[in-house]
Length: 512
Length: 97
Image (cartoon, rainbow over all chains, first blue to last red; front, side):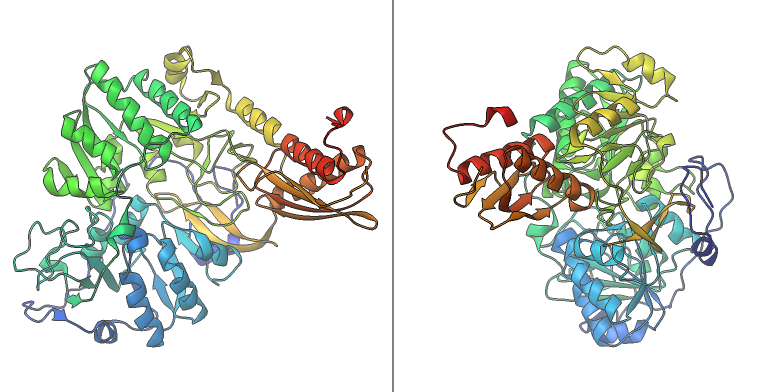
C-alpha cells in the first residue's frame, strides 16, 4: 500500500491499527464528534493529598492510558517521580501518551518498557537512548508520533483516551487552580497540558507550591482537577529553558538567517498586520533579529507571533513591533517571564494553536513560518524524525501544523559535516512537500515549483541565487559523496501520523 | 615509505579526522571509528588505503577517529600522519597531493 507521498506502508500494521494512508494536506469540512471526560463529582474539599502512591492506587488500573506534559523539558522531576511509583507498584500494559518525551525521561521509559509497565507510546517525539532503544526494536508495538495539533485532535476525537493525567505545575491552590507562571520551576505557557486537563478522566496535579485560594490566573481550573499532590520539587528551574538567549555567531547560520529575512521581506506577505512563527534554533533566533530591523525600516508591524516563544519574540512585543504573542510554550526564561507581565502575550492550548479539526486554529491564520529540517528531498518533503543513521532522534512538534502557513520556509544548511541535508528522498517523511514553499540554504534558495507567484517575487533578488532543488541536491552530493543506503528490517517500530490522523510514513527497525 | 614511529595528524573537531599511524610487521590494518560509519565507512577506509598505497606504505597500523570529514580532509590527514611517522616532513610528497 502506497500513500500520496509514495511511501510503502505495511498493510498488516495499517489494518491492525485501523489507519488510512495519507492523501492530501487539505482538511476539508468534515463534521467531527468530540468526546467528553468522565466526571467524579465532588465539592473539592479533599483534593490535597501527600501520597502520590495512594493516588496511583486509587486511579490507575492495568491497560490504562496515562499522560504527562513536557513543559519542564530537561528540568522535569514529575515524570520520573510518578513513573517510579507506577513501575514499583507492578502495573502492566499501560499506554504512555505525553505531549512529548524529553531526555531526562529516557531511562525511566526504557525501564518501564522492559518491566512490561508500558507497552504502547504516543508522543510528539523522542531522542537519545530512548530513540535508539525503540529504533532497535525495544518496544513491541509501534510508537505513534503525532504533531502537537494532531495530539489535540486525537484527544478531542477519542483516539487518545487519557485515563489519568499527571500534570506538574509550579503552583496550585487546594482546589487545583494553577498556572505555569509563578513559583520556583516556572515555564510560562501550559499550552500542551491544557488538553490533558480538559479531556482526561482523572486529572492529578503535582506541585511544590500550594498557594491560597482562589489562585489566578487559572490556566488549569478547579473544575477539571481531581487531586492536588504536594511534592518536594516539580522541576529544576535551571534546566527548564536556557536563561539568556544566545545569538549565533556561526557565519553559515547568519547567512541562512539573512537570506530567510530577504525571502520574507520580498514576499507578498510582508505587509502591515502580517503574522509569523519562528523556532528556537540558532538560525531562527537570528531571523527574528533581522526581521526586527526590516520591520523598523519598512514601518511594518505584525499582528501576531505564534507557537513556541523565545525572548527575541517577546522583545518585539515589548517594542510594539508585534501586537500579540499567541503562546503555546516558552523556550526560555525571558519568554516565560514576559507572559507573566505582558497582557498581550496570550496563553493558547494546543487545539487553539494547531488542531486541524477545529472551527479555525491559529495556524490557519498564519502568514509566514520558518521551520528546520534534518533532511529535505527533491519533492520538498521534510524529515524531522530520523537521523542520518535511520535512528529516531527528533520530534514532529508543530512542524506539520505550522507548515500550513501561507509561506512555509525551511531553513537548513546544505550539508552538516559529511551528511547532506538536501537529498533525493528523505529517510522519513514527516511534513509533505505540498505544504513547503521555499528552502533556504547558505548557497541559495529553492522554490517549490507549485508556487509560480513566489518564483516571480523571489526570482531576481540581489545576493539570493535561486536553484532548482534538484541542483542543490546534486551540489550537496558533490561535496560529501554518495552515502551507502541505510539498512532496515521489515519490522515497523513507529507510525508517523499526518495532522489529520492518516499515515504519512513509518519508521523501520535499524539493522546493525 | 617506511613507518618508523607512531605519529598523529588531525583533531577530534567536527568535520575533521584524527589519524594515528604506527608500525606493523606486514599489511595495512585500519581501525575506524566514525559518526557516519553506516553511510561512509567503506569510502573512508578506501580513501585511507588508496592514499597509503600512493605513498608506498605497505605495512602500517592505522587508527582513525572520524568526525564527518570530507574525502580531501581524510587524504590530507593521512599524508601528514605518514610523513610524520616516516620522519619525512622535510620532504613533502608533492606528487601524491
